[in-house]
Length: 183
Image (tube, rainbow, N blue to C red):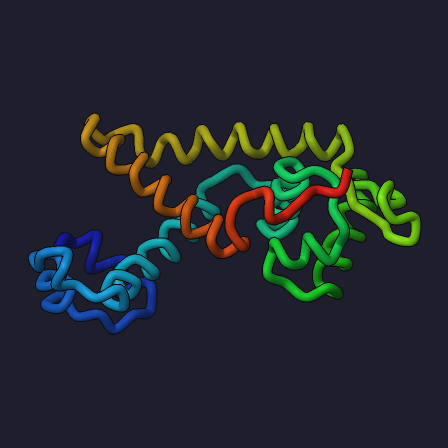
C-alpha cells in the first residue's frame, strides 16, 4: 500500500487495515466480493470528490444546485417531482433549491405544455451559460488530475468512466427513455 493509499484510508475515516487492502488487491477478481470492492471504492470516491471540490473553481452555487442545472440541461424541462427523483431528494428540498435557482435567474418555472395544471422548470439562457462556464473550468481542473498518466492509465480512466455511468444510469432507473422530459 502506498503512502497515498494510507493517507486516503486515514483521512476518509475508514478503519480499513493496510493488510486487508493489500490482500484484496492481490486476489483474483473472482475471489473478491462485491462488498469488498465497494468497501475499497467508496472511500476513494469520497476522498476524490472532496479534493476535487476543494481545488476546483469556486462558485456561489452548491454541488446540488449544479447537479439540478445539469439534469435540466441533459433532460430538458421537468416537473419538480421529477427533479427530486433524479436527485434522490425530497420534494421540499428540490422546491427550495429551485426557488434559489429561480431567484438567481438560472431557471424559470413554466406551465406544463402537456398538463396546464402542472408546472415545469426550465434552464434559462443565463443558467445554461453559467453551467457551461463552471463545467468548462472544472473539466480543466479535473483534467489536471489525470493528465500525468500514461496511455494505459487513460484507458483505465475511460473504463472507470463507463462503469460509473452505468451505475448512475441504473440508479436513475435505467435508460434515458424511462425518464421522459416534459417539453
